[in-house]
Image (cartoon, rainbow, N blue to C red; front, top):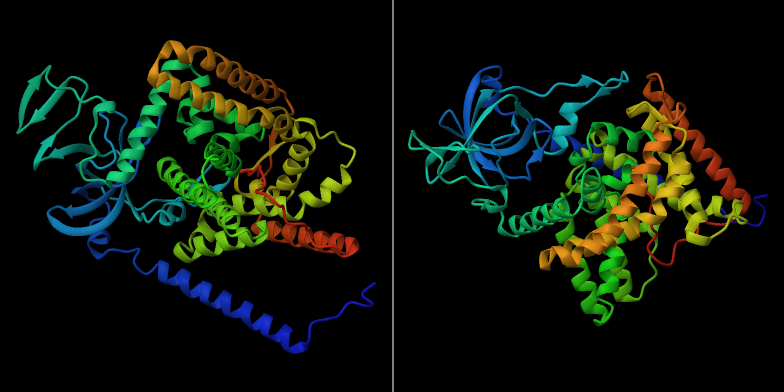
Length: 498
């Protein structure tokens, strides 16, 4: 079967092997370098003690049901100068925001791994180390500092210079000023929060929560039960801003700018992608999808062919150069990379097998994309979460075709809402119908007794063996086809599970 095909010369094979070994060695060195600055002598000495740290909130506040997670760049610990990121966990109220200067008091600790409900061990220290955090302060008392004075932001009380003043100025979230944060990021977060408030004015719950998840990746408003339903039915990726959502946003921006010249359209499109990624948060999935979308724009501007495999490799290498911990400690990066790899390597094979499947409403594309991504992510997904969704294929086919229209209607109604709520109502009603349809499909399938089941914990070597078998099968299939996987001409609408 290999007759007529040339084998590369021995020198080329040796050079390729040497290049691979060099890359692996440099990768290990880069990973070691990233861990050198994790420990701090002062923090290590104060572990388990109550301390007071002063600093600035440098990331968007992660608001949960009853708590708020504040990423603070500590500048002082008990009066001693430091420069270290600390995750402070405080009560949900009073509210704090990006750029606030605060003082937090509580016990300084190191994060610890914990066991999930399904018996998986979640590497919480590794997860936080990806984000540059080595120390945490749970159950902290947090106070805002303004002009050198402490002020407790409450619903009905302020404390200024130690004196109580009842019934005076109450700072509402929409009036918050981002004093010491980056002004560009602060402005983008202001727009994001204004967008969220407008959505919540136009739509009831849980439709408003789903709309925020689709457009902005905000899933806290969904509630635990509905979030679990999305996870059990295999469509949680649509509410965490996967590559699928990012691609929809990019294509929408490019079509809106269609009247501009190509180069201007590319520049404005790149700025729009960067602004959107900043506003929603630079998660690994968002960053990967944004880098690949940026390469699409570069290809269009230069007239070159866009190769999705090269774009994926480029995005992965760039991300790992800046943060090599992503490869080891970030499940989002791992699953997003594998899902996109499934679209590149597996989907073309399935499309040839499903040639008789109808193409109306992109049914064939959604079926092949869902199966392709599931094949590549399933071993790691089962290892990390322990949940196997039996109905994922059916729910994805029923839900994904309406997601772009739903996002479009949500955006249009929200923008119109800034002009007039009355004008926005008809569009918001249409968005409400589609959102209700998505929720109805998810809840119905999640209610089936066989929708999803848990898989007992298993060792990691089974994951490695699974991917080795998948690689061998793919290699044999491509050998039989005697073709290379085709590169899409345009950016693929990627159904990325994250």
